[in-house]
Image 1 (spheres, rainbow, N blue to C red):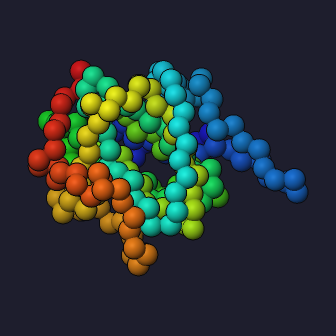
Image 2: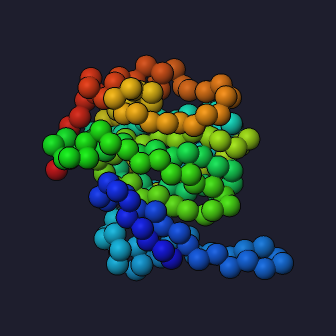
Length: 184
């Protein structure tokens, strides 16, 4: 596996070794010892999966302290533009983001530590998206930031397909109005 830390400290791309032949492919999608050697110990407790269609934009979501969540995300089938926004108040990277294409073809994974808002836009016809989390989801600690907040400057791509967002995601606040509770 190849581990590459991105410009914002704590965010990593993980690229597994993929072995292909006439039957298909094989890969190890997670190896705890390698993960801990590069990133550290993250006690993942749950794995989630979603299915979405082209144009769906989910996010930007996060859990407030003490229920912040680290995530290890990947695409099983299809393609997304995956975005993580640093909401760790007081750090120089606050409000900055990374955007990475994740697909069933490139097999990349993105590790997002606690203290980030996360979202993705589906760029293929459909997508199966999977992620591990290290903390329980608590609805009363759910929060988010509006995906198109001009202060974030996220380029969601030139795709002209209409965006499909939940009513809840359409009503999320700008970063300047969002509730940011520092993580312990």
